[in-house]
Image (cartoon, rainbow, N blue to C red; front, side):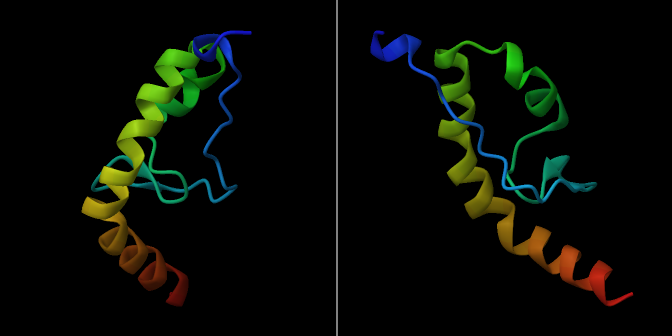
Length: 74
C-alpha cells in the first residue's frame, strides 16, 4: 500500500456537537459536510481535512469551549 493509499483514521473523539457560530464540531473541528463525506473521501482528501484542523482549533477552540461550558451550566 502506498503512502497515498494508507488508511487515514477519523479525528472524531465522540464529542459530536456542532458549534452554531462556526459550524464546526466541538470535538474534532470538522464541518458537517466534512463529517458526512469522511467515509467516501480518499486518503489524500482526508489528509487535507486533517491538515486544517489544528488551525481551526487554534482560531476557534477557546471560544467553542467557552460556549460549550456555558451551555453545560444551564
